[in-house]
View 1 (cartoon, rainbow, N blue to C red):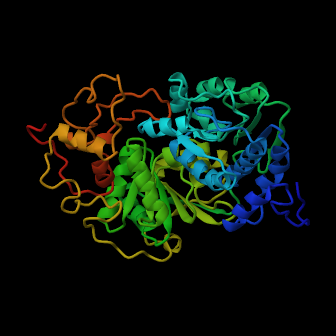
View 2 (view 1 turned 60 degrees about the horizontal axis):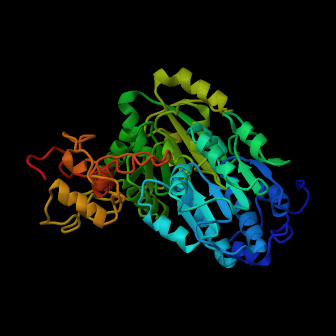
View 3 (view 1 turned 90 degrees about the vertical axis):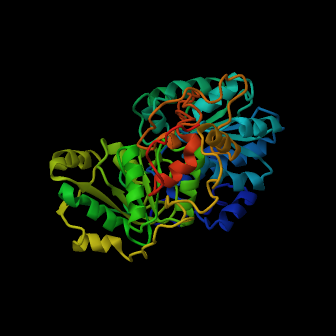
Length: 506
């Protein structure tokens, strides 16, 4: 590793091809981060690598560069359903983010990339695979489905990347990951990135990596140095005022809750208070998740309320404040949530809101996370809170068309004058790409109906696709509420649309 007194090398110095250096410089990345500097000589030489670095350290580019560079050098012919590069990721959001990093590099090398995950129709993915791609970025469940359907095979994979292997283990994906790795050629290059080596990761390393080079830039699970941590203690009856105050700043902030219902409710409450917010959690359809995340990333809304499903999948620059509205259950979740700020050398603040009854658990959580911070008893107007709010964003009155606000749609936005029956809603959802169309041979497209609605939404918010299971471990129930995802997207962030069941619908 380069010493503190040695000038940081450029990507060209590390052996990165000129065509890729040009892309990196154009993107404002003239010099590598430490994990890239440490791993690139080994990965570009074809060695198996086990990389360990804290979240936000630049791991994605550390494997994207050698993946594209070495595949381009191999010059393998592109074939239908037979990629030569494979990246496995635990969540849809992370897979999408990885693809965005790889695509400019791949395009400069004349290569094609596609992303595979559940919760959406497989037809576009199938079309891309049949047309031929060089690199597949995939979540394990949907990839196994497509392999079972003989749409894709892994016998030509020359380079395999396993990203956030520890999170794969946390989600119970290791059996599927093991099956997938077993289908790749034994002589191929493999790059594993994991914060820890527990929960079976060490077994994967021993089985699939050949004489790997180990690179650990920071101690496993270490906090990011540029983060400033705060613990605010407040009584339960004043907690909402504190949350609203912390969310009111003009810069991006990410608020974490423990449950999907809490995320949905809080986003709705914030929007009603004039603070446009969107939610991100497992009950949203993929279209709604993409839309909400895009609104947050573009700055259309400045507040994202999420469950842990987003802790490793949100890679958005400029998040100045992360708020643990509820302290997470364990220290790894705390570090991964917090890692959405202070990324790639920038600074950020992390606030944990603690009730008096949570003192002992929070103290233990922070000890295990190696965070040294003194709790402060505060109110919403406490100087420490005001300092974190910074510039207050102008309040936005709820109204039609506000991104993420969840307000009543503009006339015609949800089909004014259209039939509102369940079957009509279901057909519109499929037609508009909100819900996944039934697969051929899958039987009844609507599945079984359930009475009474869910989450207080009535039938209008029920799963129009019948909440059928797809079998993807990472996708969960792809039909879950997806038929009403426009309504979910709106209602989850402050809709005043009716929530009571209608009579004699559909």
